[in-house]
Length: 88
Image (cartoon, rainbow, N blue to C red):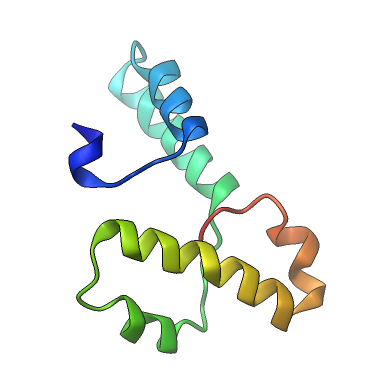
């Protein structure tokens, strides 16, 4: 079913397998923690919003992955904070 939504990597598949038997509340808590650990909320994303408009979910994920690289290049002071992030 996930293949029809978007391509996710092995780490994400393993994460989903690991929470499969958890209660709904446990799943929500673990998903929130995973998202906080692996993503960065990009406050200055006006130009990226336009690029993502009309794109497939896979394309949006790719753009968000590339945005992390861009943010690290533009803001060296964020490099450490963004080191483990997958998407912005």
